[in-house]
Length: 412
Ligand code: PLP
Image: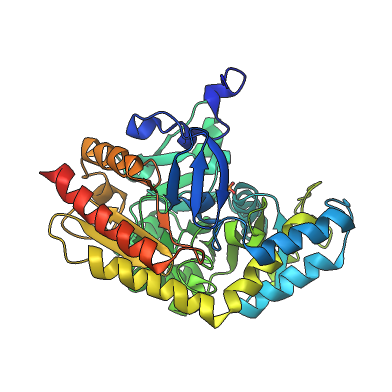
């Protein structure tokens, strides 16, 4: 079908596959760990709905939840018990959460979090890190300027200077840079970070770096926000905060907690969360927020995660990938939980600037060849790959061998 009405033929830019100079993949259906395009090609899917689909496609429990919602109602626009059930299930994984608000996307969650932080601190500046992505709200569409901490540059047109002037961007995993940013700007409202970054390939923050971030936020009265929209329930079976034992004031969730339906969430300490309307003066609302479809599918997804067999299975898949991909010389395989990524670098990168040193043509060639062999990794060297519980050990073993051979092939 000709795609003339959709802007750029897509509804989200990465789907054009322009970054790897390929035509977009037009999906026809998906089942388990495989995706099928309209030309009848079958792919082992490492994109996994950009991380949302931890159980792959059409998981039976999630399908049952969907069936239930079909009869009980997809949208009430009113409160229902499913919201509290999902909230309680999330809290059982992430006990430090005291209150939660569901929204419809990660973008909304990040946007709301900085509004809360600004209201709580009566300050305006936001500190973020180059290579992290927090959705497409104006305040986050910046990149580091040549002046580092003092100058951030717009990533998009249409954003008022007044907004961007409030966003400071510094290097990820750079503790000295972090100290300097606070020294130069003692009036930062919020520090927002992906504690395991998944938007520059997979780059986990160093524990010392996060510990220092926590300390500086405490010292300067800054709200610490962990954006776990991607890494939550992926890097570990709950939050990175619990994994590292470093606790933010606000945590952002999304993707996995919606079981495949649109979702975002902001959660954290009672004193901050109660600033949100209707309890407090920070306005936030949504027609679809906490809708029955998302809550039921999300609950089913989290119940599936609780199962030991699923956890063990994901671990096994990860070990298989590690064992086949880790000991190669000119490539570096990084994995944490069900997130992974292969870099055309001899060492694991620590920040966006390291990731940028990869050869883009080599990656494009790699992607193209894998696609032709039925392995679908994200169409950009800046995206993380995802494992899911529907993947079979033999498929992963086979895929990892192909990935390894293909990487070697494109480097020769
Ligand atoms: N934060 C992180 C870490 C993300 O990875 C994403 C999306 O990939 C977002 C925020 C934005 O979420 P959404 O696409 O649901 O708006």
